[in-house]
Image (cartoon, rainbow, N blue to C red; front, side, top):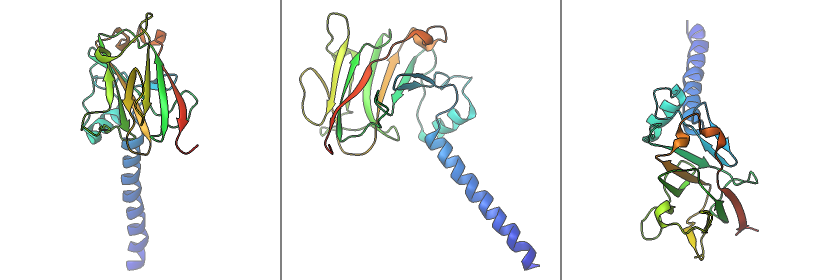
Amino acid sequence: MFKQLTPILIALIIAIAGGIYSADVMTREFAGFGALQYGAWVSHPQTGTQDADPYARARAARTGEIALGSAEGLVFIAAHDDQKQIIDASCDYVIEGKTPAARVWSLRITDKNLLPILTQSGAVSGLHSGNTLRNGQNAFKISISSEIADGNWIPQMGNGERRFVLTLYDTSVASTTGVSEIKMPTIKAIGCDNE
């Protein structure tokens, strides 16, 4: 009798462990279907709507994030620069260009799990459209580094992988009609400590 139960128990343990592992990986690494990519920036416009797929809903439940509704805005996340290199805290970056039309936007740095990176004063490491200098064409240049830089600067703290999160609030590109024509700022690495 025990000889017959042993393979069943082994199969059951493998099935349960595999199910838990796959659910963990999917809710940690996969943000859902329907991703839109513009250069290094990726957005999931269905997140926060009735049309969100089960994977997006499971990820939101796991992380506790509150998604913006389609009328509220759109979140773009960059995990790599324009050269397809993973964003790393040991590197300095320049984000340059314009955002799509939006009433307000914010740019912040997070770790790879999208948890905010805090400055030494305890503030979130980021900028918003109200405190960003622009040139005559309404374009900006933002330096992201551990050393203070002239102009727009976001401090790069700690070590490990980073994500740049650009949130557009009250924007027309959240609708499916305007999404195909948007242009996003470029992300360039300008040097790393380990080079």
